[in-house]
Amino acid sequence: MSVLPPAPFGRLITAMVTPFLPDGSLDLDGAAALASHLVDAGSDGLVISGTTGESPTTSDDEKDQLLRVVLKAVGDRASVIAGVGTYDTHHTTELARAAERAGAHGLLVVTPYYSKPPQAGVARHFRMVADATGLPVMIYDIPGRTGVPVTTETLLALAEHPNIVAVKDAKADLEGSSRVIANSSLAYYCGDDALTLPLLSVGAVGLVSVVAHVGAPALRALIAAFDAGDPVTARRIHQGMLPIFKGIFRTQGVITTKAALTLRGLPAGPVRPPLVDATDAEIDQLRLDLAAAVLEPSAAPAFAAAPAGAAAS
Image (cartoon, rainbow, N blue to C red; front, side, top):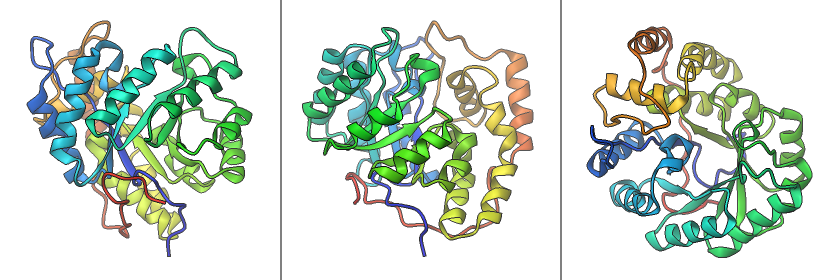
């Protein structure tokens, strides 16, 4: 019997990198191929144009092209969530409407960054974006990048909006997250790979992952084991992944993830400035981290994925 709450976008979602060609232009064929690979490897859904997708350095037109290509490639068998968050509420609502026109299944909206608005401004931003379309919204709470948390009180208030259905939680505040989970219907997704098991234990529904680019089988097995009431197996899988939980973030995560994909012969390409590609020393260390991690553990119980292309109740 499942012990996890319903997951509106599936249990395992990969925050997909954006492949570029050697000259730095968008690699649409590579994006389609990578999306297919990630879904085949076990992802129930993909976030397109999130931070891991280098959204600050892609144009609105590139975001639209990328989303449409990925939807065509995997939209019939996985949830495709468009990252539309910016520090400008008007721009964010425009991106949200464009994503809806393209056929996105949901929106990932990060807290407005740099301007550091008060909580009233944070709440207004999310409500205005949620009002702009009929798509389900996942709030992305990552104060380490944005400079501003979405407080427990603000999250509880935003949970009353019918289109705000989920949170990608990268705040590392288990007590606060527990309060929101206990007092709202928001579906919590872990936004920090290494904290997946702890957050599942307080009521999270799944994971929005970077490590799933290389470790989807293990992450899927971890979630499935916990869902089947087998925390011992889940803990063993978690411990086996510790080397890559650390290794993928030894430098900025996009840099290391693209290096890991390149090592595996998968589409990735370079990063765009101000990011810089991994050094030879970083790649050598990454090889050690990948070799030390258990990325394909022994079989664990399976779980049912949410229907592709729609939020499940």
